[in-house]
Length: 421
Image 1 (cartoon, one colour):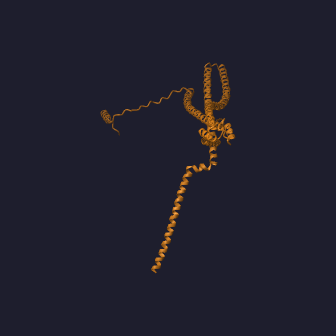
Image 2 (image 1 turned 45 degrees about the vertical axis):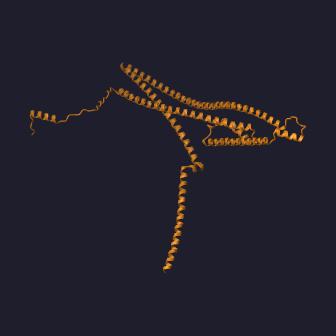
Image 3 (image 1 turned 120 degrees about the vertical axis):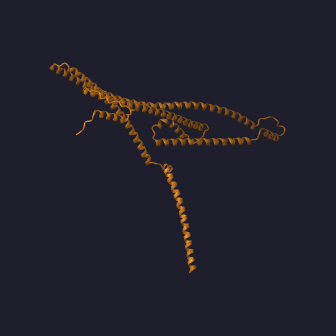
C-alpha cells in the first residue's frame, strides 16, 4: 500500500526541485506559428488554388521575360558584330578592287603587251559582285575563289614589276646612246678641220637640235606625267566613292532580303494567331451559350419550385466558372505560344547541328594530306618514329660491335686453348 505524503513534504520537495533545475535559455530564433486559413467551402479552395496557380504562372512568366531579355541582348551583340564584320569585308574588298584596278591601269599606261589582258578583263568583271556572290558560296568554294584571286593579283604585280624592269633597261640604253653621241663642240671642231678656214659660219649641228628636241620632249613628258597622276588621283577617289556606294547597296540588298524573310515569318505567325483566336472565340461563344442555357434552366427550376435564392447563386457560379474558363484559356494560349517558340528554337538548333555534322563528316571523308601532315598528332608520331629509328640504328651498330668483339674473343680464346695444349 502506498503512503500519503504530507503537504509539508510536498512543499519541500517542490522547493528542492526548483532549486536543482537549471535556468532555461532563451531561443535566439523564433518561428512564427503556421496559420491555416479558414475554408468555408469548395469555392474558397478553388480560389486558393487559382491564386497559387496564378503566382506560379507569374513566376514562370518573369523567368521567361528574363530569358527573353538575355536572348535579345545576345542577338543585338551578334547583329553589331555581324555589321562590323560586313563593314570590314567591304573595306577589304574595296581596297583589293582598287589595287587590281591600279595595276590594270598601270599595265595599260605602259602599253604592256601581256597575256593577262583577257584574264584581267574577266577578273574585273568577276570582282564587281564579289560580296554578293560570297554569301552564296560554301566554305570550300570561298577558299578556292580567294586563292584564285590572290594568284591573279600576284601574277599581275609580277608582270608590272617585269614591265618596270623593261622600262628601266630601255631608259638606260637611251641614256648610254645619248652619252655616246658627240657634243656640239666636237662636231664644230671636226667640221672646221675638214672644211678649212672658209667654213666659219655658225650652223646648228644635228646633235644640238636633237638635244633641244629631247629637252622639249622631256618637259612635255613631265607635264603629261603630272596631268596623268592628277587624273589618276581623281579617278581613284571617284572609284573609291563608287565602290563604297556599291558595297552599301549590296548590304542594303542583303538586309532587304532578311527583312522580307522575317516579314514572311511574321505573316505566317499572324495567320496562326488569328486562326487560334477564331478557335478561342468560337469556344468562348459555346461556353457563353451553355451558361445562358444553364441560367434559363435555373430560372425555370426556380419558377417551378418557388425559391428565390437559387438563381443568384447559379448566376454567380456561372460567372465564376466563365472567368475561370477565360483564365484557363489565356493560360493555355500563353503556354501554347511559349511551347511553340521553344519548339521552333529547338528545330533551328537541330538544323544547325545537322548542318555542322554533315560538314564535319565531309571534312573527315575528304581531309587533304597536307592537313594530316601538319597535324600535331602526325608531327608527334613522326618525331617518335625518327627517334625510334635513330635508336634502332644505334642498337644495330652496338650489336655489330658486340658481334665483332665476340668473334675476336672467340679467336683469342681458341688461340689460348691451342697454346695451352
